[in-house]
Length: 161
Ligand SMILES: Nc1ncnc2c1ncn2[C@@H]1O[C@H](COP(=O)(O)OP(=O)(O)O)[C@@H](O)[C@H]1O
Ligand SMILES: [Mg+2]
Image (cartoon, rainbow, N blue to C red; front, side, top):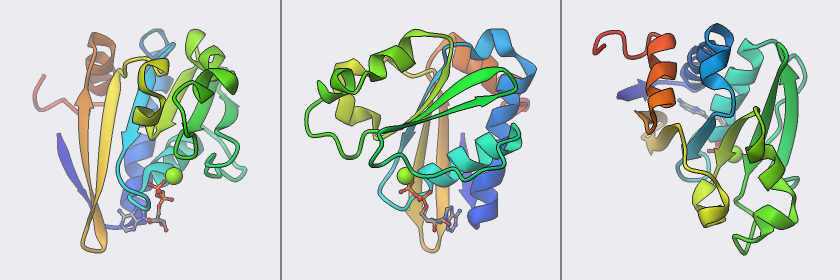
C-alpha cells in the first residue's frame, strides 16, 4: 500500500494509525518487529513519534541514533525504538544487548534494520519512506501473517480485505 504524506502531520498521523493495531489487538502485536526504511530525513523517527504519542507518550521522542535504543512503556506494552544507523558491524546488535529487545513480547520499531543483518529478526511490517519533493511517500507492506492481521486491525487494508 502506497500513501502520499503531504506534510509532517501526515507522517505523524500514519504513525498514529499504525499504533491502533497495538491498542486493539495486543495478542497480535506482542513481539512485533517493524522495519522503518528510507534515507536520512525521510521521516522514520517522525512516524515513530506519531505512533508513541498516539499511545499516550507525552515526553520527547528522540532519535536513538547515538543511544541505539530508546525504551518506552505505554498502555502496559514495552516498545523499543531502535536505530542502527551508527553501527559499523552487525555484531554490535549483540554487543549492545539489543537481542534482548527482540526476544520478548515488546514491539520493536527499527530504523536502518539492514545494518544489523541477521541479528535483526525478520519483520512483521515493513514501512519504506521516501522523499518526494518536499513531501514524503510511504509504502507499507505486511511481511507475516501477524503483520497482515495488524493492518486489518488498523483498518488500513479494509478496502482489500
Ligand atoms: N510528510 C512529510 N513532509 C514533509 N516533511 C516531513 C514529513 N515527514 C517528516 N518530515 C520532516 O522530515 C524531517 C526529518 O524527519 P525524521 O523523522 O527525523 O527522519 P529520519 O528519521 O528518517 O531520518 C523532520 O524535520 C520532519 O519534520
Ligand atoms: Mg531517524
